[in-house]
Amino acid sequence: MKKVVLPLALLCLATAGMNAQDNESTDGAKEFNKWSIDFGGGVNKTSGPFADPSSYVEAFNFFHAELGFRYMFNTKFGLKLSGTYDVINDKDDKWETNMFGVDVQAYANLGRIMEFETWTKRIGLLGHLGAGINGFETKDVMDDNEWMARLMVGITPQFRISDRVALYGDFTVSRAFDQEHTWDGGVYPAPGSNQQGFDAWFYTASLGLNIYLGGKEQHADWYVYNESDKLAEAVSRIDELEAKMQDTDRDGVPDYLDAEPNTTAGVAVDTKGRSIDKNNNGIPDELESVTQRVDTLESEVRGNGGANGKSVGLKEMINGGYVNVYFDFNKDTPNAQSVSGINFLIKYLKDNPSSTADVIGYADEIGDNAYNNDLSQRRAANVKKVLVEAGIDASRLNIIGNGEDASVDKKSKQARQTVRRVTFKLK
Image (tube, rainbow, N blue to C red):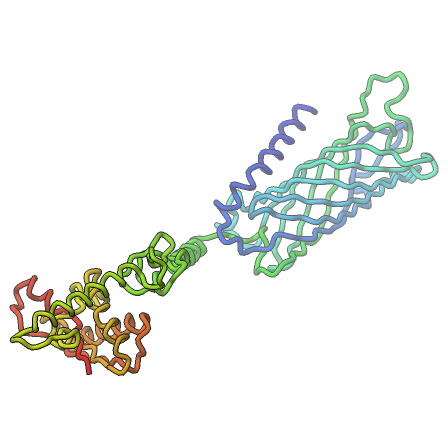
């Protein structure tokens, strides 16, 4: 008997140990219910031991009842706690024994393991293995209950009636040990015998219902994780990743890691997305440096008398086309080298709160006119967005899409770069 019981016990432990790995590899989103109430009734049979050699139990002896609560870790493995009640009768009604028990068993969804879903959606098969404690008493013979332990193994065919109910049949074989009385109430093993109290076989056959609990559509007994589920899960993960990787202020730090998600475009940031401000004056160092250079340039221009001996200020520089925002081919977001051009305009508008500006977009001649008109409009709109995020009131900015700039050689890549731009007109 040990040659049979020990391998089965090891199998039980091995399958339980596989649960953690199987959870993620086979169930994906785990869109299934895990709990069920299993109850049924049927017949039992025992072949001994008996104190009276003439005792005999019919092959279909009524009655057997069972109630269990089962939890599936995933679609293949689970555990069940159950209680049983049996009445064992001699065929001539010379004695009657009542037995009750509690057991814990490991369950394997053999139908899922053997891929029944490839040929049926209604038929399932469960296998179970475990151990329990039983007590029994023979009426008018024993003064107290007999307690014993037993090992059991069984198989459970299923028929799915609906997503909430399945009909099952079960056949279980158990082996008792540490038994001190026979089924008809005699002393066991008999005094002077060499029996060890380990030869009591007990069989049950029953019909019952699996009642599935939970808010999902199907229970683990019937849920099949198919390719469409895998695709939906992959799409969900990609969407989640894309959401995490969004970079609203385009500083190179994803929003979910960005402690300052609205920094001025092009301003240097630290690893947490915060603009670098070493002197803690509230102005990013890079923007402060650009502003200082603007002040210096304006001072030098004024000091030199400007062009033709006239005083030239920042406004004249901007309106003269010396301050531009540039774009890469077929792009509507400013390239990294355009930060200083935007900051020139930011400085002027902040120093002159009554001034307004036209934000004028251009495109090169590659592509059709309609597309380039739209592209120039989008470029101007995106530059306006950057200015608004930097603190300039949107009402002070007027967007103009001027379409293609045909003033350069269309065949020259370098020349076309100069006309893919946004320029400004201050008022």
